[in-house]
Amino acid sequence: MRPLNVLGTSLNQYVLVKVKWNREYRGLLDGYDQHLNLVIKNAEEVIDGKSKGTSPIMVLRGDVVVYISPSEAI
Image (cartoon, rainbow, N blue to C red; front, top):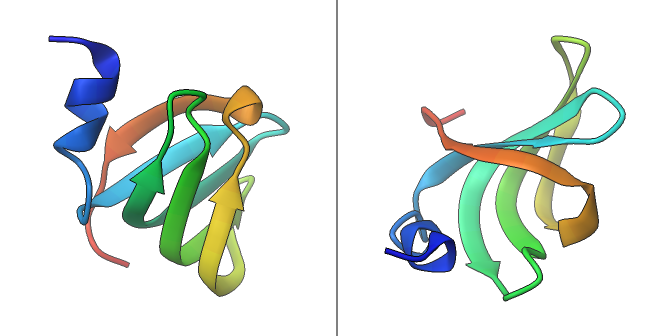
């Protein structure tokens, strides 16, 4: 199975996305493309383990993504 196919199984599921600069975003995966650009709904920003707030929708550029993991709801 190809990595993008695996990511497709996470659509409409909660994910934890680690990006550069020691930041994480937790939310509902709404969409993605072949460059790993992600659309996250109800995204909670976590910096150094502390919640910094939420956003109703967020677009993350694929070149800053370190990993994506399944997550519990916020």
